[in-house]
Length: 72
Image (cartoon, rainbow, N blue to C red; front, side):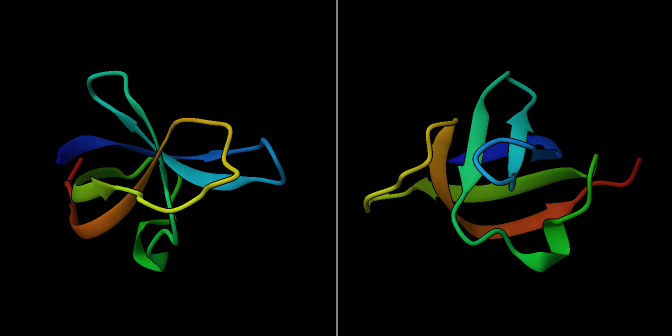
């Protein structure tokens, strides 16, 4: 799936990085790449839904396959 959105740090469950999609979707990347951990960054990612078990109680768990940031 292709997701365009904004990176946000969530202060829930001990804190984690997320992506809020332009479509309003909430995504919780498993093992978020360090390069994307920047509050407010605009990104486009290619991802797949996480197939394993997740204790995450927020958003859709995803695995990021590729990404790039957008210029403001």
